[in-house]
Amino acid sequence: MFKKCPMCKSVWETRDEFLNDENLKLIGYQKYMGLYGGGYLLFKHKTKSCGTTIAIKAASFSNGTASTQRLKRIYKRNN
Image (cartoon, rainbow, N blue to C red; front, side, top):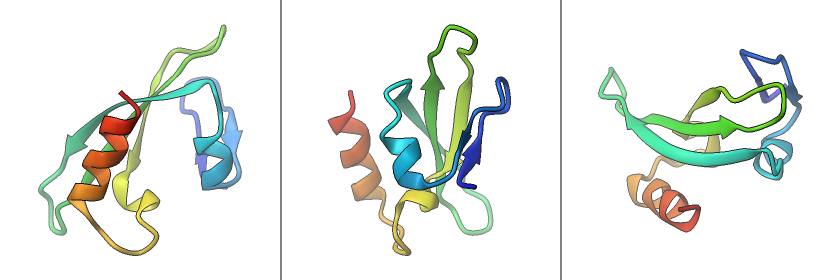
């Protein structure tokens, strides 16, 4: 399982399934300067029964390499 919605309990088994879901919209990036830095991508889950914001570690989308520039491009492309 890749991610489960904390509000409506919808499940996305893979990253690709999550990214291809038309009910999800990338709405932002939240920087986190913890031990390893990084941050979270924020998605709005827009369905009739849900409207929550889902935060996922940005590293989950990096294929093993962290890149702030790549995350900025992803965000700009979706806005």
